[in-house]
Image 1 (cartoon, rainbow, N blue to C red):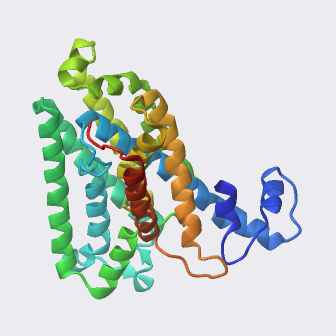
Image 2: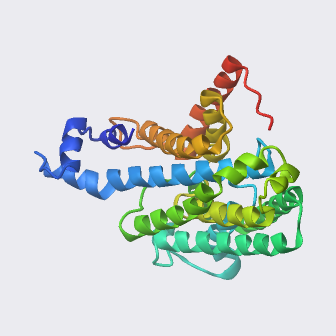
Length: 329
């Protein structure tokens, strides 16, 4: 999928030439090298990182809360990232900020401005969720609090949208559709590093998530520290889902549906299998969606959220009906 993804676009590059380039050999056309190194390879790596982070965030949320509808956004962390970006883009009308060059360069910061605003918003909500976790002992109550934080963040965004100018609204709407482009160099390295740090708690707690599938009381009887698992889940999900939203925008479908696809295909609830396979499938599926977005032979691209939902939702429905899968935990 990685090779197919970087081969497709307005300029077709043969897969064998891509393979030679990845092996360090020179290509016959210098323009191919420029296209691959400055745009397509960084974008494909971004898709892999975001796919891994979102799918594992969704898997953790579904396992911890034992809720098939839980996803990486239910704690409100990604909504906080969206609020941060909304304050940056739409806040110009409310607070007097100005957008440079017709709204394409935010406060001379470009992509970094959106990433910083999204990160700060995610950190703020994550901090509030962490404070709530000190007081709340019930996992279900924590889930409700997360949903309330998400609703409150959405309400603030709606207020900003109501007072926003048409150009600002269009820019924010485009951000909400998700994008894997424009991230390379240090931003890509930082994105990968944050996601890798978020992976570590998820990997370390795979056996604890297996015990959680039978309920908190059973997990406690097996010696699982529920509070430690809760903190691990909050930190891991906050880092992976929050960074993915900050760098790529709110990408739909991947987090909530990829874990279900893995359960349907492999017929297992063992997280020693679910974790690595969900990561691989999430990365592969996002690469596939991005390849479809490219519209081969055309310079136009479709927003990633449109393709991921249109392609993924019918696929999950078909697999559920075909295999008679029960999504209850």
